[in-house]
Image (cartoon, helix red, strand yellow):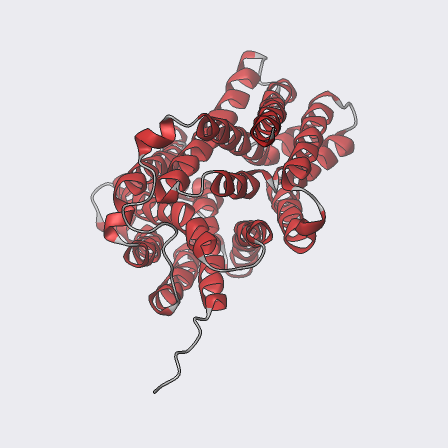
Length: 399
């Protein structure tokens, strides 16, 4: 009788790590070439600004789709599709603008393709890892999400180096180069062990989740997480440029890159030492640090201190998204795919609302970004408030 080999869940972990790197490439490559697309194809900047809107809107639709249909399609087929769509979108970005009568239509079709891939990765990688029999799920989840940060850092720095070395005119080759990662990861997801998070038919429905007060607390925490992270991350470059007067290239590297670095360090730190600190307490401390960073960045008269606050904000938001997912899956064990999909949707919603609110407040204050950032402090306050509510619910449950 042949011995049954033990499933290699480390292979699943590596596939999901590369999945998050792929998501970071999808989210952060196109913004590096916005001005190039504007000049090459004579596309107005107002239309260029619709690219991130289309990206996040597509992700929201994918989140809703996943909540309804992924369990029927199956995790393996869906996650392989995520890599296929991501690769196709990046390759299409290099060719479709030239092939179609409208370059902008070609760009938008490409964006929708890789946004579908990104949305599937966002929803599926976390429950795939949650279903694996790892000892400390909270630590593993934090380490997993750190790879989005390393992907973000990698795509920004490596793309910038390639543009400098070979010229930004060769951006199409760089887009195809980044498509190699999801293409390779198709094999990883096709061959790694994937377990079911909840047995078929036993996961909670969307309506059942909506009836749970705990779900709504988790949803607000996810909205706050997305808003805390992206309100600072998306405006960091412009904030540093307006406050310190450096060149745009330096600001792109000093702002978003260092933000991504500190966010990744936080996730690695909790991934290594998480068992020594209770997750809710760590998140409360992070929420307080995030609030201090927003206040310091917006009110400080010292430009370097404001920059330091922007960078440290990355560390403060690092645990928020993966931490909320870990708490939610522990508290709602039968939530299944619907839980992760709806929480991803809440996070994306926060990621859309936060930066928009900061931008609108800044515009009303006479293009004063500091006042917009100060308004953004409402999101860490919301995070702290609902973490306290969560602790009170936990205390009541224990009693």
